[in-house]
Length: 326
Image (tube, rainbow, N blue to C red; front, side, top):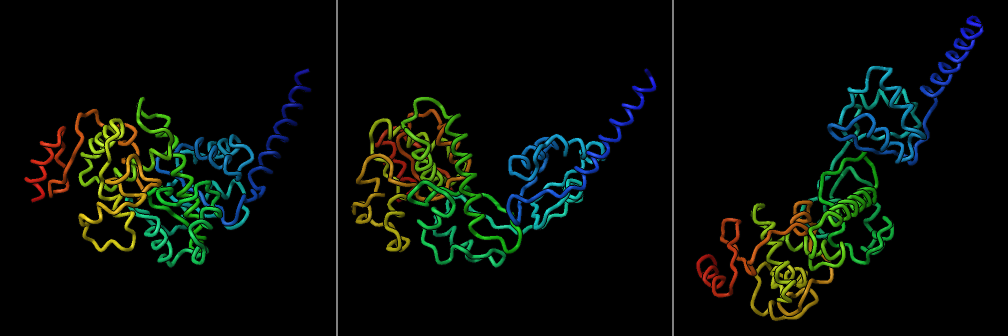
């Protein structure tokens, strides 16, 4: 009986070894070519394997986790951006991410940029394939699967890594998808009773907060002022929206006639939010918009040093304007 059990154990061991050997060296088919993925600093082996499974590179995540552990390399993962241009075995993949064989270029998308500035930055990158060069804004949105009709504000500001020669559409799509994810997460965690009906409205207000903020410490207060004005049905009266509405006609000087000229983005002549964002809001602006400061302030004015002076009444605000602006 013991001899028969021993034989079965040997057979099972041989089968397991054969299966492991097949798995270790069998090429993984890339979902797309090149297949690009980011390995963030501090990522765990399990989270990396799970993300690669979700991306379609791994059929199951647990064999790769066991391979790394049996190889003694589970704690040797190197952060960075990786690009695979051919089928690769699990063993080779493990070598790539533990040796840090990173192939990367980078482009930064800056908070407060307009979509025009974003397009110009990607067009200027010598490392990207400029597949959007002859596309209009609507065509770019269609190519990346965006449901929105207007591109402003839809792309998350961050530094993006990519393989040389990658399509600029990949950057647009990645930045769009990340913004959708971050916006939804922030929206679900928002404070109650905000005068905002949809995540898109939050994005619009966050873009205004982004453009109005000079000192980071004022961001939540600025959001609080705008939230208070929306609740009380008071005109937002914010210069950045007027400037955005002027478009190419803005020469750097905002005049009284500009504040009186009605456009869809003139928050001195129209109530509520403008129809779209006016720039790319960063995560801090999104968080401030959805977690505004609890304040009675309805006004603010720039002090001239980047910070703002906040006021509860128009009389206080006018005194602040006289002090800091005249």
